[in-house]
Image 1 (cartoon, rainbow, N blue to C red):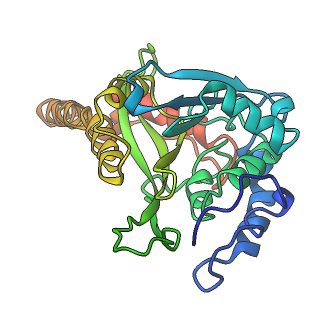
Image 2: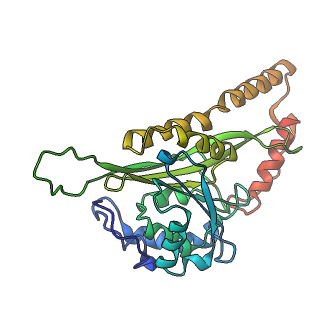
Image 3: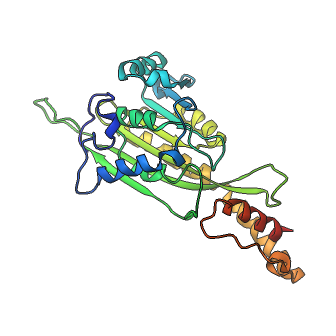
Length: 304
């Protein structure tokens, strides 16, 4: 992809076919069709949509400015641009949080708003592969699936007569599994495996980054809010360092979770207790909508 196009909603109904992407590497028609087919499982209605926008200028060393963007503010691109400008017209970073009520429910953004937002921010279609990992789980899920993409963005041609150093931009996205304590009495296993999605696009012309986070944990939100005031400017290198903080934060509980599993299975061996306590599990047809409930019952039996 080349330089950024004007920020507009033009052609949003056909996103991502309305973007300037290489047809050699990206089948935009397939992405468009899949998003339409998966929207009911994946996305909420316009009325239920709740998108949080946070904008921050690292050089200003000010607190984040946040606001929730409603469906009405997505009616046209000019109204949405006014909304963004009202937060901070000189922002170096625009951060979008897409959330859900719980980890296996629809994302609280409608198909219309997602297509408009991703058109406005020119989000690469490959990020949709990560989006599709979320939403309601109505069938078997490949929990180990990991996705990563990256793309270089060329700077504008220089009009200067003298020698210049041009900095390329980039965009990248990935999903990550992380572990948190759920704080519920059931199941007995105190840990839950959750997932988040990340997309960053650094524009070399404006030195601005756009970030999109899917189901970001509150702990990571707080961490990021403390990082931005200490960045040394908005250069690509400084922006890229944020990924180090993201990866270190989401990975820190895996050690404790693995220790928990080691201790649990060690106790099973010591007690010579058969897995599941010798009980027979109920047979549920493959792909049944009750598979989630069944897996919870099985987990409950195993951990007793």
